[in-house]
Length: 337
Image 1 (cartoon, rainbow, N blue to C red):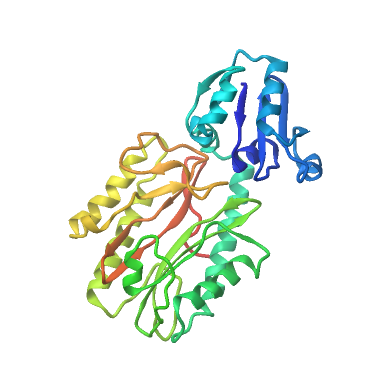
Image 2 (cartoon, rainbow, N blue to C red; image 1 turned 180 degrees about the vertical axis):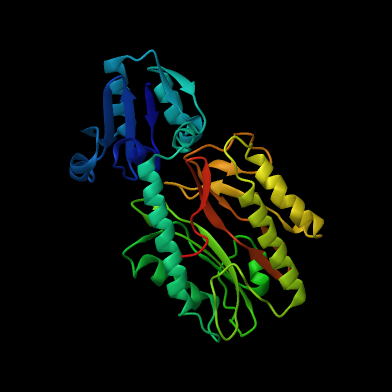
């Protein structure tokens, strides 16, 4: 298949190397990665492709296309600016393939699954290590700083995304930004974070009660009865969705199962996002676990199950684990360690 890529993780998937300025071309039996002089040496050491150095990546890509003259070239139109797309279309017929790489990467190999499992384990261990750093009287900024230290091993690992650290009403924002809100005993603390291992991401969320002892378990006890009811509802929805995972089942049914439980409990309007998303080289990738996705569950898939309830001005609750489908079975990767 003849195709062209320009996104970093997509290029890495194809040849084991990438940078923030590179283009990958697959033309028959020929594989090229085009980059500039800043990265040439590193690319030659690591890339499973012929490395071509150029200051003008698009111009060099056009030259290679004209050299090999493929009948057509597959391209994800969502990843290219209008001018670049027009320039490429001058030398070859382009076949639009939206989400081309995401679809290809949706089913993970055994090696990828092993790497992801390690990323998840290291992430869960970081949650446990951070538990000892949580104390009252400090704000979300300080909590976030300490959390990132544990996740990255003081900079030795890369984050999957900027962690979410949110207390009480701030947790009602699904993508809350850290604030100067001070943590107090009896508070609710939502933690959503992940790290990368060999470039593959992990993702996990826990909502915990700040008492004399702090636990990252999904079995939490809150003093506030309304918070406890909402928490138990979210946990019930998550466990029901995970239990329903079966090879061949349309993914959208998982979203419905979780959403129906939350709706029945009276919190339907407070579940404001889809149930989950795929995880791999990108923190959000195929398959997306939402009400529209009719793709059947398949071996090799990795995705999150993360229902939530968010009551503005009061509190937010989310429980998230990554699951892996292998040998026709669902394995919960990030539940406990």
